[in-house]
Amino acid sequence: MRSWISMEEACQRLGVRPQTLYAYVSRGKIEVSPDPGDTRRSLYRAEDIATLARRKQAGRKHETLATNTLFGAEPSIPTALSTFVRERLYYRGQDAVALAGSATLEEVARLLWDAAQPVDFSSSARTASPGRVAAFRALGTLAASGHSTHGRMTSVLQLEGQGLVGQLANAFGAQPGQQPLHLRFAHGWKQPGRVAELLRMAMVLLVDHELTSSAFAARIAASTGASLPACLLAGLTTLSGPLHGDASVRVRALFNDVERQGGDQVIAHYLSTGMPLPGFGHHLYPEGDPRAEALLARFEPPEIIARFIDQASGLTGLKPNIDVALAALVAHCGLPDDAAFAMFATARSIGLLAHSLEQLGVGQVIRPRGRYVGILPAAVPAR
Image (cartoon, rainbow, N blue to C red):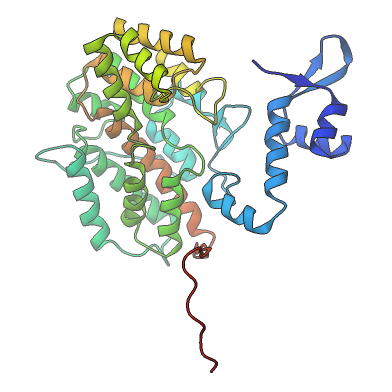
């Protein structure tokens, strides 16, 4: 439940004057609400105040700030691609959930890439045994022989990016052809049109998520002048971790346990051991992942899974995130076992390429410094 405090208390906790508090509000860092007891006064969200107070405390030492820049407190790379405002995700200022209502991946790619022409992910490349291995093998081959991004026009790189996404989709099982990407996936997985719409919506919601670890990896590669497929490969290998884009695998395992043992036994085990339930809660969305809410509203998961989601949310207070929604979608439609990662990786490749292209405009190599904490070397003799 949200808690609200007065202006005086907010200023005291932050150690600032009212003018500074108003500036935080205007920049969307603090949510404000009318005081129900006195409409002439405003109340300020206590959680936002606490977050700002922690950041101010951490930022007092340069070393602490430098460490936190890499490990989660305050990303320092400027981007115009996506952001969060009051627990909503926006792509270049447009609400991602609203876009997912009707936009195709091609339309969202054009938006994020700031492309002058429509984006086309059609591809005739065929894959004998589609799947994760084929996708990474194909991308690795392209990365090994790709040309540096330096000295090449953005429009040329955008065309290359279109081909990369199209080939990647085919390697994950999309049917080769000229149709929009979600239809090619539906045909490749032998699904009807209604499922194609669910795939479209899910993948639009997954295109980007601000400065994730995979986006950072892609940007590092881009900053060195690596080829576009190498930038994408750097991002996707990072995405493949179970704490990032492959988190739905843990949720699928959870659902398998629920189907074998029953929801009551599974949730009792997690609660008694204190282990977090995979796929429930998200630090960026304390009140619920709007992407998951939007996607889950479009279909009915299998009854046992739907009941478990409700039970888990009720007992923990944590709502399902996008990983739960993806795993539930795979179960509902009977998609291939690795379909969740295939959708995630293909959709996020659009965002990773957007980050790579944006980073090229900076013209500076990303080179963090290490903070040595190991054994001190012996005294170095004087020269």
